[in-house]
Image (tube, rainbow, N blue to C red; front, side):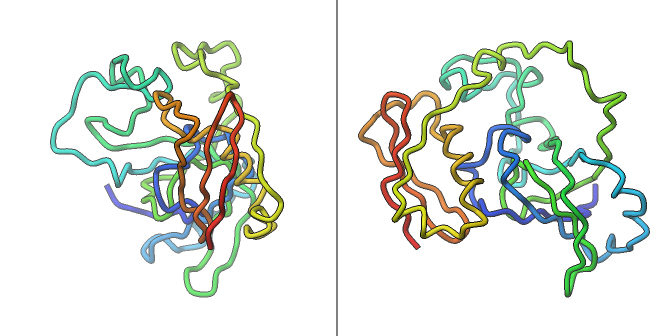
Length: 222
């Protein structure tokens, strides 16, 4: 396998990442190709597609061994499911799959053409192994069922974000941050209303707590 590109996002750590692609469309990323794959011909025709599949590497979840069962966070972290029935990063092969929106093709100063995408669930610097177009005629299955993952579908929390703290975040990145917070980044098995959580975002540290379905941003540290 060759790394063809890396994606750059505003989330440098795993905590805070959307749990699946497409949950936070406002979260943008820039896919920058490795020197070997910067031939513009490789992107010919890609502008005709609205969405792309990204095949990528769980670069921060590599292990020498594997387990046939894992603990999905959305089930509280205590119930085990078969690894192939989950999207856990801890797999025999550390490969991820994400569907993203193609927002545009950008010409960078030093790295050739890059892809601007939306709705990614990847941390900054994640290696990309391949890119394929999303085909509605083949990839869309409206009748599909979601198994145990559907039990938490649509879950979100109300976000209370003080204006004086929100103003510390660049205006163009505020909607994405609020959408990330509304997904409740906490592990599902933690429910301490006094506990302060935090994660880095766009050069800032965002701290919050959650009580009775409401997420309160307590501080944004620059």
